[in-house]
Length: 153
Length: 441
Ligand SMILES: Cc1ncc(COP(=O)(O)O)c(C=O)c1O
Image (cartoon, rainbow over all chains, first blue to last red; front, side):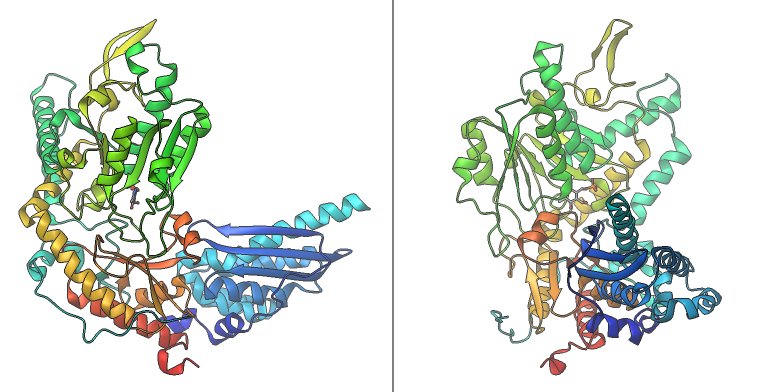
């Protein structure tokens, strides 16, 4: 069965016990993203302290992949600068485009931590979007948060 | 959650009206394997159907023997292509009880509905007085239902936005049927057109069109029936339907992609201005202005999808040989069995009518604790193709408070073994995600 390669235990753990779930104050930007092909949704808030991502809070509904992805992302980006987080997002994107290529996953393992478990998802084009939704939302929210904090300064 | 369905004492397997083994042999794709050598269990005919050899052969025959642009040119191939194209129109018309001059070829159901919606707004600005009869504008109302496929919703929303008309709709009952309690007020003197599906692609419901058509007639409204899920699966005769328009897609009825049908009552079609304009639909063209052909040519601008139309006629003939009543009875037997088997699994909830009364073979369901995407993934791993998501009927999933569903649809090659595979696959999904009945706390 191929399923195990997609549904790694790490993914199922994040799905069952999501990290950082719930919408919290304060925040500088809130975005709502949907995956129009399946109706999965995420509402995501970003709170910055200076350039640093102090909190990412979210609520959403969707499949195990989309829900686990946002949870793993939460672990990865808290405490990073927006620039660093966006770089991590690009690495995750690279992983998602790797079509199951093990070398790519190995190279990214140190940086992506738990999120490298999503390597198996990259073999299923229809599910890649599920894994990427939260990262798209983060990118969007961070950009907005930066522009509001810049305006305030 | 309360379990309202008790476990049936052994679901019934009545003998199936169609010879599944013989039919499967007609579909080359069914002999391929998927996901490491597994038999393909194709339960996604509602999205698009597979094609029998006779349909593939018909398209190939056209390209190898008569390929030319129909209705253009005077050479022998053009003559033969025109004859083949028009003979196909006659065959496809006969399939729904319509004369050939009421059959318009479009790309699919979506385009057929848009054709009507644009014709109604174009009517408001037509320079020809005879094309203004059905003009839609401010103060007019268009009625749809909450169970429409996006293809039979967005064109009407957009028509209303273009013209200032108002969109109204009939709601749904908790068991997946149209709520007709306010039919008399929703469809009223201001209503210009009622657009309704005959079979829901997500709930499986077969709608009581008679009541709706009767009310529309009382107030002088046009009726458009979305037959995308009915024409492939049940006998549909436009002379019995009483509607003004019927649309359907070739690819959902064993035919090729790229061809759909708009049937319209001739006098109504004749009073409509064109949607797309260009070659093949004109009478006289001058720099100052042009005149158009009568229907159906008025609505078929450009070189048509000739080979697809020929293929669709072969599909109609294939279905006719099986008999549409047998096709419907076949699917009903499978549906009854599948509904009983699926609803016997704790945690599985069918979204839509729970029995086979006025119901087609689209079965949408949810599995408690497993998202439809994940159900679909486990099924796919077992070689079972289903559809997951909102099925282009987002208001429906919202109405029933679920994010999405898993949907199985049946067709002429579906057998009890396919249903058994589905049921076992759903149990496997429950096991895989740790929500199998024995593990539920
Ligand atoms: C009920 C219904 N109406 C309309 C459509 C649109 O058909 P098509 O995509 O072939 O235009 C579909 C299928 O997608 C459908 O199921």
